[in-house]
Image (cartoon, rainbow, N blue to C red; front, top):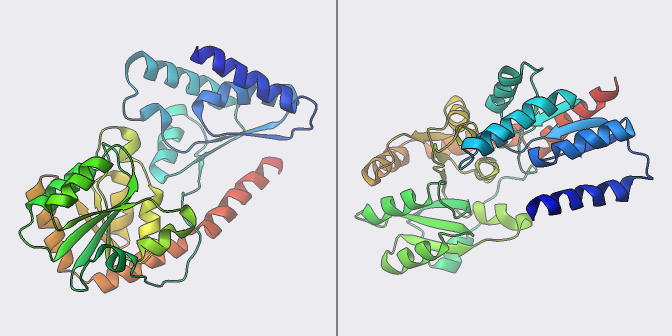
Amino acid sequence: MQVVKYFEYCLRVFLFYRNKQIELVNIHSLGLLPLGVFLKVFYRAKLVYDTHELETETDGLIGIRQKLSKFLERRLIRHTDMTLVVSENIATWYANEYSMPRPSVVLNAPHRRELKTNNHFREQLGIRDDQIILLYQGGLAEGRGVSLIIDAMKARVDDTLVAVFMGYGDLEAEIKASAVQHSNIYFYPAVAPQVVLEYTSSADVGIHLIQNTCLNHDYCMPNKLFEYAMAGLPVLVSNMKEMSELVINNGMGAVISDFSPAGINLALDEFLQKDLVHMKANAYHVAVSNAWEVQEQKMLKAYQGLWQ
């Protein structure tokens, strides 16, 4: 049934565009790359493969499905005119894996924002002024370190540090149940993308402990990392290669390697003894230097190169 739907979708796209003058085709997933190659040939157009992750190395993609995905990408990527990726390590992987020119990197970063703080969480959740707010925002799903943070917060003996989980997903019920039993855990529902940084800037520290369950995670550069930074939050991240390199090289936070509750809490306590004001300034500088306004120009330059 899924195969039928796939071909139906491809046919609908072709029929919709068949009488139009197409000069460029942009494909955002490996599954649609065959359609992209077909449209490129049919229209004699340029083809851009704009990947949003290392799709052949994602969590859960194993066995014959992974082999087929790798086979498909290896055969079709040679027909693209340009490939865009979202991290430096992913760019290096593509260049080495497929013996191709190194793809351009366009980070998934927010627009530049003036550095200002808000107080939404304290006002709406009743968090005291003397408590430090540790924020996790994004998908509340397995593999992203949500349960690790919950377990660490449950193990703390005081409430000088509280964790706010803002988002939605399968672990929402677990967070709400934990919040009922522990005064240092809070849940806040997801907010619209247009205002998310207004809430991010209501916290003191950002955390993202994505787990190394696949190469895609090791090489990921999540948008939430730049959202934290644009809100002026120093960050705590797991020891994934891409994230840890950014954080350490720019002095904008710390890296956690021990994911036991005791290990996480030790890292948190050591982190809170550091110069958070300096790390806050570094984080914001990194965010501004890599804001969407910068990424947009990189992307436009790459597109313009297609016709030069």
